[in-house]
Image (cartoon, rainbow, N blue to C red; front, side, top):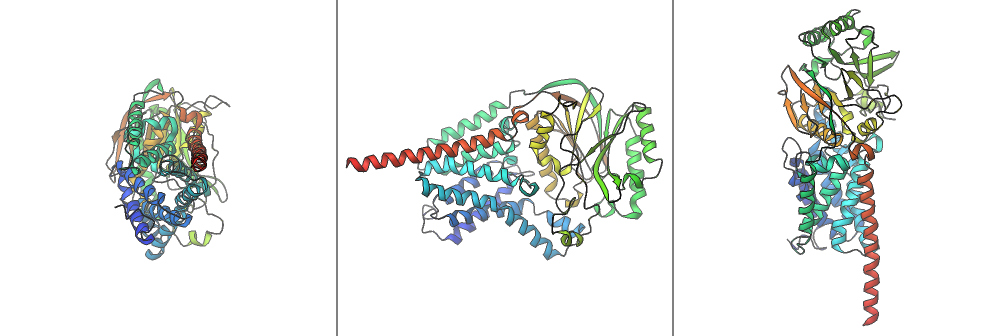
Amino acid sequence: MNKLFSPASSPLLISFIALVAGAVNVLAFAPFGLWPLQIVTLALVFRLASHAQRFRQGQWIGWAYSFGWLAAGFHWLYISMHRYGGLPGWMAVVAVALLAFGLSTFAAIALGSGVRLKQRWGLSESTMLLLVFPSLWTLAEWTRGWIFTGFPWVSSGYAHTNGPLAGFAPVVGVYGLAWIAGIIAGCLALLPAKRLPLALAATLLAAGFGLKSIAWTSPHGSPISARLLQGNVPQEMKFAPDQIETTLSLYYRMISREPADLIATPETAIPLLSSQLPPDYLDLLSTFARQSKSHIALGIPVSDGPGLYANSMVGLSPRANAPTYRYDKHHLVPFGEFIPLGARWFVEMMNIPLGDFTRGNLLQKPFAVRDQWILPNICYEDLFGEEIAAQLAAGGTAGIPQATILLNMSNIAWFGDSIALPQHLQISQMRALETGRPMLRATNTGATAVINQKGEVVARLPSFQRGVLTVSVQGYEGTTPYIRYGNILALAGAVLLLAAARMLGRADRKNAHKASENR
């Protein structure tokens, strides 16, 4: 084993081991939930990188690990591009591989930079593993979450949604969990030579477990009844012209079957632009809302003029003459909802409808349902916890009430019966943890579910079955540290540890210089 970590080890062998460790890391996430694997595999990679002698060696270790992890983590993109988008199979494979390869740049730079800092600052192995690598890893994960609009799927922190570290989520968010998990990984990487860091690892795990007992938010108002609809419309039929009328009838029947304080459909449950609907369709739903005293959250693309349409949620209120509520998705999916510069040729090769939406505003007023305020987010938007936190932080200012319940409306039938569904549910769990608010999920094929303010799934429909999830939901008010500070605490912690590493390196060099003078 010691030979493996020596500088003389084959770079190809080390990169292969890192690649396999990355692929195994996917088992730490939903639906598998083996969260310790995230820490163990990262500890292995940190140990390998700590023995690298050059920037490029550390870079390739980071690249290999991240590529194995991301390619395994979102291989299901192949389904949307090939089965539903019409791309040739080989091209879809190449596209997924190139995306994973490109996104692995951040991990590569992190570990390569760690090797360079070790040489430049004269750092010890302990300083590298406990301070430098965890901090650079966190900064890399955060950067992947926003640059080029961001793609933070299977970010390290999500592995710990159901583990002891989940207690840190309301304080430092998903990237803070990545940072803390990185520190624990550094502790493990120092074994068996140094066992003292095990106490630090145990302390962090115990602290996370203890933080779970803190109630950062408190109940607001009275519980509301909710009906979450899962139409289970096959993706290949969703936008087929001969199926449109069937889909419209399906959702009208599902909505009007029973009253509830809130009735929510999936994203684009209505597969026509609002301007293309039968003239009386929305009027019939509005009549039902008034007569049954129900609020309806309807997923529908809304037209704002020629060539202008938004991926929206339209809210119908039971109050007579109440204005129609509207929420427009603001964080759009590249290629699926907007076309990046120079990529129109690629999008045109795929058969994906409504491929260039307009963006909504980041701050939008929540939807009033009795004495609760519902904050929608549409599909991919719940990957960006800092944006949801910013909307909640703005609550109570500029005439925007603070939301008490989160609502995710999704259609991820694009990815078939794959691990994308439980992974997306896990992402919603993290948002509930960070904000101390329940998250309702209305999806086309799954996972339609209710998550409480502690991030626990308390009710769920089976995937790929048509059904309605009827529940009672209590709203919560208040502000978690993450709502107040967003990612600042995690990023500041990472930067402070890097500064501490530099100071330790300087002190070690001074001590070494004094020792040589005394000889």
